[in-house]
Length: 125
Image (tube, rainbow, N blue to C red; front, side, top):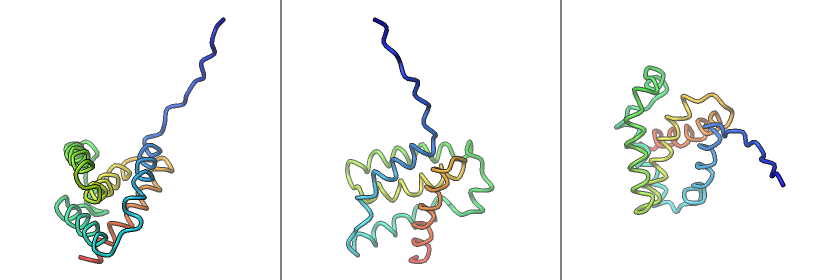
């Protein structure tokens, strides 16, 4: 008897990014002041080191940033096992960069959410 196979639409890259963001929320959503400070300072250091700004991203292509994204992913994977708060900070910056170059609604949402954290890190710095 033949089985029917349901076609599964490929997931938009922004949707995958949003789902990963959502899975990390419990780790950085309700932090103590001390841990929140570490989280925000980590984002600020990454943003400063990578020269992430609206203009900075607009001037670069995704191809130019691909090596940076790969290094961030490697560090994210490493710190995910060692220090989840630092891993979340890395993810915020990495997702902000990736979502800048995607056009689907979920990517736009991720970009706006990560921008809030980046703006907060700039204000604290």
